[in-house]
Structure formats: structure tokens, C-alpha cells
Image (cartoon, rainbow, N blue to C red):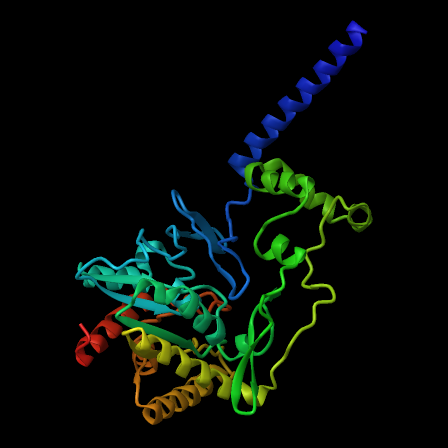
Amino acid sequence: MKKGLQGLMLTLGSLILCFILLELFLALFSPHKLRTRPYHEKYHPVIGWVNKPLKDEGVHYEFARDRFFHVRHNGLGLRGGETTYEKPAGARRILLVGDSYFWGYGVQDEEVISAVLQKALPPPVEVLNGGTTGYGTDQMLLWLKNEGLKFSPDIVVFGFSAANDLDEIASSVSYYSPKPVFTLEMDRVNLKNVPVPRTGETDRKTFGNPRTLLGKVKKFLRYHTHTYQFISGRLNSIKAFRSFMLETGLADEYTTDLGNLPVLRNPPDSLWEIAISLIKESRRITEESGGKFVLLFIPDKEYAPEGRVDDAYEKNTKMSRLLRDFAAKEKFAYFDLLPVVRASSAVGEPLYNQERFDHHWNAAGHRVAAAELLAFLKKEGWL
């Protein structure tokens, strides 16, 4: 029995030593540990998802091979420094409400439009970043109503993105996650799918919250060891082994399927009417709370490989005209970034990330957008 115990200890010690040596080798010559933590959002029953606090060191988020940007959310879920709902005496607040453009996908904390604006506008002016990835005008309105107005903003800058804002209000599921949706009925918009269903697949995949002990252990190993990723990647490439793991429940299938969850879809020809109704409502609640409202148009990246027609150019041109006419009819402030974007492109100063499938602003895009917005606000006399 003593020899058996000694043999077991020797085997266990050998395995631990092999694990340590393999970890060191992989760390030095072929890193496999996941360095990204993309779960920067959490479930919300009315809005679908909101930013979660990422205080202390924040997270590093990968957006291209070996390219990372740092993200820090304050205690209230805004990207930037700490603040409170209560506005300090004598302060003026500018609140940016939008999607991943305002949130700052792909750029460092200090490069985001809100941070650049804050540097140009020292206290008592406070710039707050209410951007959240994946939002369309529906979730932007709901976030403004449920969260944004708590900050008593003096100015609300409401971003409208040509890239996908209409697509994101088309149904009650977006980016494989349930969300609220407004439908158009008898020329009125009605809020549906609230409270937003919370599914296990959404928790597990979108928010990175495994529900089982095994799932939590595997999540820990993915982010803290190289060996787990190295071995599991090779085993999962064997179809028979992968099938066995799925059948026994030892592996997870990260699918977009949300089970029998019903999906509400808006007809494509109703999306523009829904969007402008939501913008008008956002303006109404802003002004009723004592703030000023400006709609800011964010053009899509105009990229066309040689020999191809750029659909974004026509889309931007059309959307710019529609929003300008809409703002003139409703008599509210509107600022269009399209002329600035095209002028920069003409002189070889791209304002968007260069990765082909990434349509977000780069650091220069955030600087230019901040400078142009600042000039607009000064011209309006709002500062």
C-alpha cells in the first residue's frame, strides 16, 4: 500500500512537472491563453443589455491579431472616469448616447471621443460616454430614458450610425441576443418584448456566464492557462471526439440558436418611420428634462476594393439627405459628419480602422469627430 501511494505521488508529481514545463514553453514560444475578455455587458430586463462596471485594471479587448485596446467602465457602466448621477453644483454635462462608435471600439480609453472632448472642455463641463456596443435607436432611447436622464445632462448628443442602426431595430433579436423592439401600428410605435427574455444561451455566450461548475472551471482554464487551450484545440479538431464531448455534455456548442424563443420582426419598409419616431421621442424627453438635443450623423466607412462599387457611398449620401430633411422639418439641431469624413479621405487621412471588415473610427476619427462636434456646440452657443 505504501509503494502504491508512493507511485501515485510520483505520477502526480510528474504530471504537474510536465504541465509546468509545457506552460512555460507555450508562454514563451506559442501563447495560447486567452488574453481578451469580451464580456463587457450584462443583461437588462428593459434594454436588453447594458455596460457592466469594469473598474480597477479594466479589460484588454482584442480587435485584430495581436492588437488590443483597453476598456474601463466606471461604477455606473460609462466608459471613462468615475462620476455620480447627481450633477455637481455649477457643472454642465454633455452626454453622448450611441453605439460602438461613441463607445470607442478599437481605440484606447484616452482616445475615445468623450475623453478627447473632456480634455478640450475642462471643468465645470463634464463629458459622459453613454455609448454601448450593438445599440440601435430603440435601445438608445430606452437607455436614455432609464439611465441617461439620471445624470441631468445639459446637452444630449444622439448618434445615428448609417452602418447598422436601421438593421438593429428590425427585430427582437440582435447579435444573437434578445432585445426590446418597437413595432409600428396605426402610425404609432409600440414597445414589445419587455421584459426581455433571458436565455441560458445568451448568458453563456454573449455575457460569458456559464451556469454549470464544469463550465466555470473551463472558463477559468481558458483565461489562465496555455495548456488547456493548446490541448483542447487539437482534440476538438477530431470530429469523433468533438461529437462524443457534445453528446456527454462535457463540451458546449456555441450556437446562435435561442431555442423556441419567438422573434418579432419589422417589415423593412417600416424601419425608417420607426427610427425617426424614436429620435423624436428621444428629443422630447431630453427637452422636457431641461436639456438640449442634437442628432449627429455617423457615416459608414466608404471602402471599395478596385473594380467594385462602394454601396456605403450611396447609403451615406441617401441617409445624410433624409436626416437633414427630417431635422429641418422637425426644427431641431442636426450635425452631419459626412462632409468631414469625405474631406479627410480625399487628402489621404482615413478616419476608420484599416481592417477590411471593421467599420469603426480609429484614433484620428475620434479626434476629428470630437473637434468638429466641439466647434458645432460653440457655434450653436450651447457652451
